[in-house]
Image: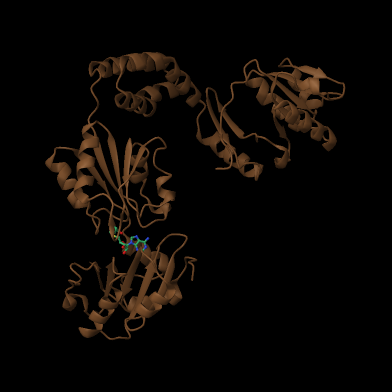
Length: 465
Ligand SMILES: C[S@@+](CC[C@H](N)C(=O)[O-])C[C@H]1O[C@@H](n2cnc3c(N)ncnc32)[C@H](O)[C@@H]1O
């Protein structure tokens, strides 16, 4: 993040604007609406500022800018057509330790001004850090059309109940649930249709009910959510909604930043990831943690790469929950086989190539592969091997030793669906050497079968090879 967004209380605070054109008028308008005491330094007011003067009071100094003009100012704005005047303002501001913003000159700005969607007291500020004001304005236009004016009313209403709710619902988690229900339920609906009295009656009733629970935490729940193989665009709507509600999140190594950034910002984060040889938090510990956190009344988000029920041990985790009477939901995700196949242009089935598809794990137990070769080596069948990178030599050799044609097409997909995706194609005979040469690392998936030959025609995702 290059900038820190904050909202300043400008009520009664002094600001200075140098210049008198449209840009100066736009800044003055915002500042005056925020209650600031504005002084304009310019030989004369332009049309827009003169217009603004009809509705607001501000000072106008016609003489030249001097250091004294900045006295007691919180922030100052350079909007003059004359660069030398703006430069002078920057020097005075630097000497006085006051933050300055110069229009269209990011290098001379201590801060930038966002595009604002005003639903006071609700404000949405959009910034591109000065790099594309046009994009900010476009997004602002979108928000203006999608956020009803009544949201301001909702925010004001919520504000008027804040202290009362704090006193009547002392438990923090319960209080947060109360707010969530309020802003997305019938109270909000009444406010949106201007039925303020009905909203108040309903609110008081809900509040009395919530207060009866005293300081008791609400009941917790676990959301076992599949996040897909990496591209955040592959999340389901339901996954996203639950990610936004969680109080605490437990996540693995395969969950990338792009997905974690979509989890509620103030949710507590617990890394329980595992590297192939580094089981940082044992599976039983994760189960215990889920039970403890949900028992404290929290909404616990357990994020899993791909789908929780495909080589994800999701079943084991919820078995423990079920035995302990903890409520849970399971949200499917795009499993790596399906995601990698799509993003590498290798259809898992195809009328001319494969009528069936099998998913197996290539994970060795006690140094041995435990695969049913007969069932894998079938005509017109695609085999997808999860966790097979370290045993690739044994897998490809096993296929050939058990009767598969060494020229059978095969591929390995590293970091499937992500920006760093790489796809290496070959045959059962050549894939191991090619993979080693390319230095492929986990996570990687192997696809074996004649469907791999379709990639040349069907590849669409710009990967790194
Ligand atoms: C423990 S399994 C988890 C599978 C997951 N539950 C699913 O449904 O995709 C981890 C293995 O999935 C595969 N995998 C997961 N994400 C992948 C990705 N983005 N690209 C390639 N393979 C991936 C790799 O074989 C990795 O070793």
